[in-house]
Length: 505
Image (cartoon, rainbow, N blue to C red; front, top):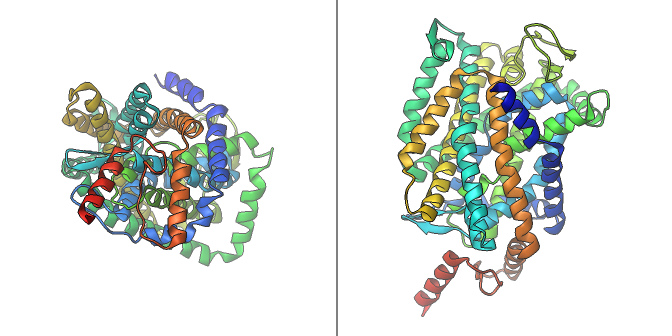
């Protein structure tokens, strides 16, 4: 099974997907005239929007929910894996993905807002909805919904849970070993799993409001604390910073370090971390209460910066400054020593696809406190990401229920996700990371191709951006009239505008 998963992962994450994601980001950056740069000030201003309603959450809460999906294990263990397999140059390609991906995030999240619907007293939207309502291709909506349920409900939760289990073991040790159906598992890991499942059940059975209120407190607090520790590491080693940045830029184009490996791992882990183009961000974006779809699109673009340029860079600098990393080929076997170890700074047996490099970096500077804090950060980052995955799963189950007349009970998917969390916690890291990559790749293929087709046929996001920019320039009240812009099937906004006009009479 592990061999099959690895082979399938290699097919999905072929160079075609890597360059498709980079190409889409560049394409939209040019078309929007680099809106991710021009509207940076507006992004920061929109972050402060705390307007929510009975049916929708605020822009900041939507940002927190989407960040809970973006800021996760990919920022800690994923960056370590990118460096461990792709070298320091992989960090440069993560930055490239973030900069270009911000425009992709704007496009997909704006689409999520334009074509959102109101269902059972709450706003819902995402790729499945905009593929059906914009293109009229219900089959593509169904394909994405199934991919998202498989990816976010089955494959990806295990990756986050696995990192939590490894972090607990790194901090507290294994404890007593218990024989289970999955092999021997330490009691400390089992205790961590029990805590995760209890708290997870309490929150996901409370709906999007409970998820939003939890994430808007936890995500900013943990992200800020993590960045502060990274800044302290940088401050204490200022003399090494120029050399580290030089190494990142030089290694990004070095044949010796493996040009293909640097790009491949940088892009793969960059997309896994910031989720731009993956189609996950639009779900939270659609739930936001805003005056114009472009507003939430810009907020979501900024979330890519927070994820990769801030949090991922913080991780990379800590690892590279303290030199707590190895570089090896993917076929290197730590147990037998078979394979190629390109650079060895720490024990060769250290698991690359895990939080180990990050924890060792913090341990080298802050002692046991650093290691414990890294474990806590991983716990909260991973836990909030699992919450985001559940919300995405629930939204796509709701979409399929609209199509198939309510034949998919939500409780089944709640229990399935919890099972996958348990499975991921007690399984091996390399295997579970490959499964997660398949989930990301499936959604990315469907979503990136789909939004490119939407642009070629209708260009709703470009019309939306021009409309928003014109209204901002006129300094008038911001509103959205899809009919005036020639955007069809944006029924939520049509009804909302008609209601506002009726109230004004």
